[in-house]
Image (cartoon, rainbow, N blue to C red; front, side, top):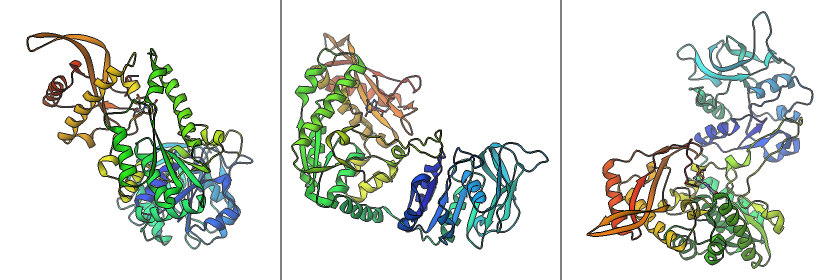
Length: 517
Ligand code: XMP
């Protein structure tokens, strides 16, 4: 496996992505947790130094452990990683602009030209130069003994340097980003010369993860909050494979789920996969406390508080539980690395049930910590979860409460569930489900007049929402055809008593949000 030592670059995760795409298993570890003992234990076959925001010219700036250079494994330094490698091996780094040419701060697109043959650069410079993405304030002003220059750009005379005998490579630019179009080739060459065969697959990951969970958990009991979402489902399935009946899942049913959702999720895990699942049917509690509340933030707070209370109540009944499983993903893990206080690094990790592990004295099992979302899906398929389940659109924790603007009533929830089911059925029937990032129906807090048959109706209006997005941070509405919208409106009004008007929400995010509350 390959070790990425993280010096705090914003794009370190992309390095991991590029390597995974090459079927090479890698892990990112922050530099301050990597010492010589760690290196011996990890035994990497190759190491990459990431970029980072600090300056190696600053006293106390981040360094790799000295032992990394004597392990006899290939090392690739990127940006800050290049500079720290030079400095540690006897070169020199300078900050800011220097006169007389030869280097300056550089941000954005640049072109590198070759100045020597290097195995790392196979397939590069076929057109004489390569576009790269630079983002650096400092620059190398003298390369370390043993190194030669293999590529230069107008502002980076040491854009590519290497000591081929020791397999040390250092580049000033970021090959992992999109704006270095041929960057993947550098990683491919690097892992090949490091001896990786590119045979890491999800089934290998599954085996390793199962062994790691067994080693961590031993014969202790594990509890897992099952939401029905992809992450917690895959985590539960994986842990179940590792420790079987030592795992108990708690499915908190707040009465704000979609039609048949509780039955489907509990049924799948309990009946098909033989997992212990507690179905915590607490609809009365949640809907009781939400009664009369219409402010979106108040609703969220009530639901969040009750969710934790309920989870804790059921979890406390599981005797001897020592671990809490969470479907934390890789992008959640290294959210931000703070360098403001010198070499100390703060890594924030998201807790799906924030604060609970400490409160309950539980240790965390997070078997998806190394995976990206699409890899979690692949692992889910590998574990035999049905594909329609794995590809499901995201569903918010507060559920239908935030799709029912204004006061929540059981009547409105029932109508909403039916309308949503018809809408999603339409989307699936037209083969659009996988093209859409998230789709749902919201019931509006207004009744409107209609005419059906010979009679007057006075029923609720609903809004259909469907968006395309990459990460939910920004989104655009999905351009359904008029035929689709017309057919869907007709079906909802005919099949769902209580709704006599259907609208389609064409707001993008921003300025709107995806949910209505
Ligand atoms: P917004 O409405 O903020 O939604 O554009 C972005 C994504 O987040 C989901 N969402 C939530 N998920 N708890 C959650 O677990 C929440 O309170 C919440 N609010 C929004 C939303 O469904 C969309 O995928």
